[in-house]
Structures are given as structure tokens and as C-alpha cells.
Image (cartoon, rainbow, N blue to C red; front, side, top):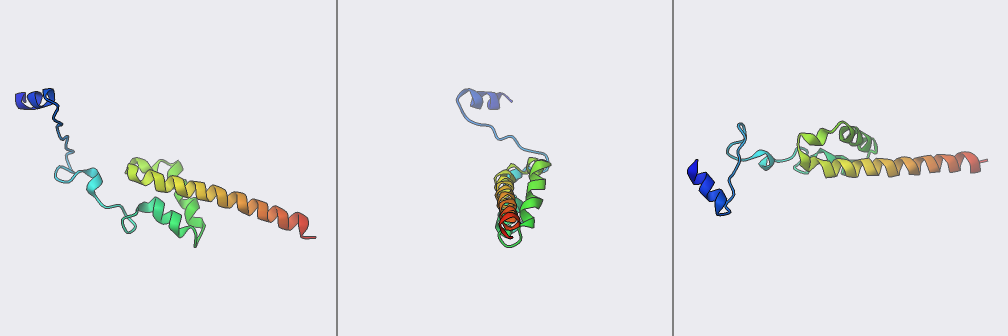
Length: 101
């Protein structure tokens, strides 16, 4: 304990380990979906099937990224893509309805 205190005084960092992830650390685990994470995978898949953006948006709003903060940016990108797609879809439907006569 005294050695750790001395190391702290001279500016060295102490590694804090988790019980189950004692040898690797929590964020050394690869992300799901081919290593790019659920959020980015949904973002890319959304260009083929836009429903994937809405699934990722739901995961973003239920705070799924608290399990792994690395997922947050991909889920947020999917939420933004879903918003843009929805606005574009509403504008397209309104144009077709009102100028389609």
C-alpha cells in the first residue's frame, strides 16, 4: 500500500481493475456486429433497410450505450439518419398528395 502511495506522489498512474475483467479490461472486448458495433452496423444497414435506423434509435433512447459507451456515436448517427429519413419521407408524401392531382 505504501508503494502505491509513493507512486501516486511521483505522478505514476495506478491501474484500477474490475473483478471479471481483471486481465484485459472492459473495453478490450470486441464490439458485436463484425467489430463495428450495433450502432454503426445499423447505420450502414439502414441505407438498404431504413427500419434498422429506427431500431438503433430505440436502442439509443433506452440508453443501450450505457453497457458500452463505444456504441453511443453509432446509435446517435443512426438516430440522426432516422430523423432525416423521416423528414424526407414526410416531405415526399406531402408533395405527392398535394401536387399529384
